[in-house]
Length: 417
Ligand SMILES: C[S@@+](CC[C@H](N)C(=O)[O-])C[C@H]1O[C@@H](n2cnc3c(N)ncnc32)[C@H](O)[C@@H]1O
Image (tube, rainbow, N blue to C red):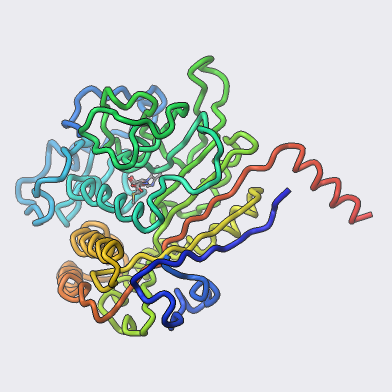
């Protein structure tokens, strides 16, 4: 049984990967990680076939906070009314905060990023960014056939789930299906916000409003009673989501078929540069304040560095960690890397007000201080002389077969004799 864990570093052209060593680590306590780090529409739909379970768990948000009773005095921030690239799925039980952005109403207060048009637009841009940053692949785990049951935990707009299940990654959502990425798979995407499309073309993909931290209660469509065991569980950009990542990892383990794969893909929000010029930058200050705010409510925003240790603790084997690198701004010389940097810059500067508003508040900033920091970030983040990049962690692991667990137990018993 391959129970070792490996870290692979992924070199990329055009951003000086070979020329200079990394100057500073992702954080004080994990210098090793820095040494490893390299380059790495639908119309708003009224017919929402929510499965029973999600209806049962559906919270009734207070009328004062609902979309329909939004106080007219709220000024919409500039980024919200812009035309998104696709149309927006409006979540009817969303609630607003003082930033003028809307958030999930089901289990209100669990998650701190918005769910409105601008955020949905950002998530789809971020999907393109992460695809580019990690080699253009939807999945990295070495699966030699279509996994039968696939779970996309915290699916967001569902863009990954739809592309994995039905559409080839290069296919626009609005086009007729021209290729199937994994026609033999049945994909379930879960989220606290029901902001995913229900297109007729999405044949082998369904979305459920659900809390991934709760018991997973999925049943096979054939019997309706038999527990659905997933062959592949995918989690992307979830580092902001869970107070205890091990809870979700254990749910995944308990609901996976032996031999199945779990995969994480997450951004590491401690910026780096090869020149050291990121030190003291606004980008560094912004993320430090963001992390401080989230740590005040018990969330470690640098948790991706722990995924491989936690996966081993839960019982997964064959753990692989890849650390890719995503440039910020258009400083790389390679055209593809330059484009990636531009995507990352838009993701950060356009998204910042929405995704950081609550976290900066937890850090103690007043509304004015938040606005000022975000304005500073928008002004400074694109400076190409900083040559900033963010590590992107891809970590995948396999659930062992029963005979492997047995062998391991016997070997251990023999050693203990
Ligand atoms: C940053 S988005 C990532 C979306 C998607 N995975 C992607 O990469 O495009 C995080 C998502 O996690 C969802 N989320 C947060 N906490 C959750 C929970 N406890 N259970 C299910 N979804 C959750 C949020 O509603 C949000 O849509």
